Image (tube, rainbow, N blue to C red; front, side, top):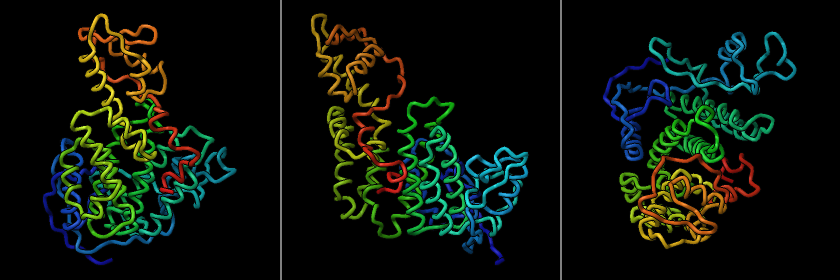
Length: 391
């Protein structure tokens, strides 16, 4: 193996939680850090040391999982049920299926030996692994989908770990990151009703932000078909972020002036102006993936809007039509609108709501709802796999 000389440097803002000991070259670090800081300005992450490799490593593992890891996990009975050879699940020592076993994420630790080339999957194998996860694992219906999510989330994290060590860039990196983002954004909606013990939305958000940071950095190195779509998704997901908009305004004209970007700019402007009715109206017209990106902001829109209505229509004798309010809030039903108002201390009488300034209270976020009208129905008959592939 070629020898590598290492030089240490300070890198502020690069989050180590998703990746192994970072082996980015300095020029790629310089590209990624501004994007990550723009999207996650208040993350509180500490500066870290990282090493610059003078050579780029290329893995030699031709399978989705290195032989050594597969044998080790088989001996330790750590195979996931998706990876067990058919017919051996009830054996004393279930066997691994080489065609279905996928390298798991390994957390970097002090004293842990560095990855060898035979343990690293080259870019083409990484892309093949991503396609396998999306085409074969994501569609599974036999198990709860949260179990499918946990498995795919971990294996995609491992893919990005191998990408980091090998400094994979260009079209393969962009394709993997785009599919990873679609998976994470859609999962944030598909699993919205799960308790935090089952689905950690904050951890999912951390990985969305890191994928955006890495993807936008790669976009700056060339021309890519889906750049406008994902630049717009970054604005929608980080609605209200001044730094994210500032980054978008510096893009080339053909990206900045694309329909997707103009729509994202418009929603961000409406949000900044406090025009939450317009935000919800535009949201109704957005495709499924863009709606998933905005999904986490829906409750904020409604909370602000209800506070404005309660202030403007506060009167002992005034009654506001509940149906009209439900339409403005984008609620799926009158029952949802009633529960939302009552959660904030407002009285609902029959088909009307009574706004009273002294009655309004903010009791924190209520349980998330599927939002069929604003998001769910837009999926239509498309499968999860086709959505993640961007078809």
